[in-house]
Length: 181
Image (cartoon, rainbow, N blue to C red; front, side, top):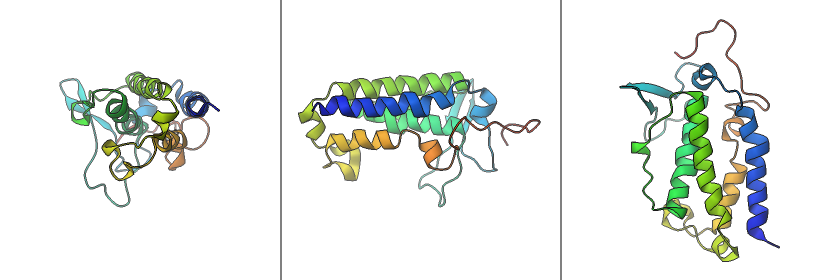
């Protein structure tokens, strides 16, 4: 059995069939919509730039997030940083990210970081999948790389899995409701 092929097929199927199609046609209003007060989002930072809300340590319970924030998180902390740490030069830094201010930019950002991740995973052989993840994965450093790839497959739709998005199409702001807070 070709384990790399099997993992790639699962990972890419979830991306192409579960997560990504739900975001087709995403509008800027939907991207920034805050269904409850206090959502974390992507906000203007001046000079045509944007920044993502975040604080450390994360509040308990964590705040709801906008689709913009969640896509930014997937593109940075889940895909971009890991692709750079495991398949690139490790220089990805969330502090220097140009946060996308529109839905089109956000989708392009997450698509690009997904492409970096899946390209790197495609280059692994059985030995690469069996090797430990290494220090970039903190307490999971000793886990085999296949476990990290599997985690991405199972976390491929975190907005829905964490109750931020229902199954099916992206939620739309009610007619006449203002977007944001």
